[in-house]
Length: 322
Image (cartoon, rainbow, N blue to C red; front, side):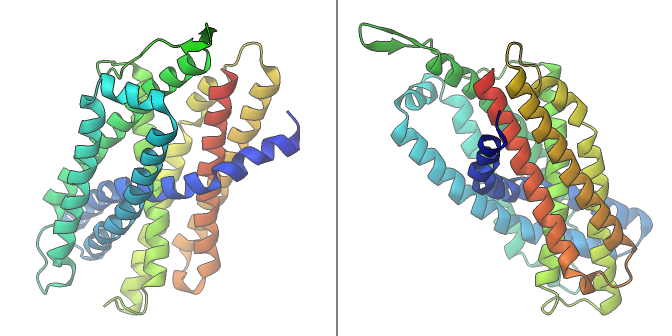
């Protein structure tokens, strides 16, 4: 595949990847908050708890923006693709569960934010709601990946339909949530780690943009940013450990060597972007004043966005070439 054509794919998917970045951050924030709250209670320190409460506040903003874009994209797809309406109506339970789960997730974040526990003299214990939100986020990830897998199978059937008498007929393949394939659970785990990485990357930006309005002292603010950098680094390295499995899955394209090589280039570029972001997070985690390096925070955020764009491009190329 020519380089000029290959570069068009990430350029077209940059905007969807940006809003996916928000969605993953919204799902990963409660998981990271629950970990920080547990560490804070075990060690008896308030720094992780203060950072966790800001994570939960940030999650609502990310979730609302992602939901608006997701709803608009879904409405447009239903308007432009008649077969998608038939697919949803054939088994409406799974899509309804996903919509209900997302709505419950946003409402829970809204109730938690309106409680204003982050600014009380004695804030309430946020660990139980953070844990419950983490379980709900894992359920949403599993349901979304299951529906995405079945939707891809239906789209392949529609694209490969043969025309008979001027009418194209494709087999209806309704969503099936009974699959227990190990690949699906591995994808859920990898997506959860990627979501935690996205939440950590956005939390650095969130803290940096609100540094003049947060009731932090200078040392406490620097500690929160270093904690965010370390959290992003660990989750990013763990998410990269699933890249070999993704490599073996997406590069398996018999009879299409050019497309397989293009997928390899995209995946290698994705790994390089995440490693470069990890290098910036290491620098921030070792800095005494992380807020004095805003370019590194913005750079790490842009690299994660680029990595997500390249991963989406590899998945799209595999879909069409497969």
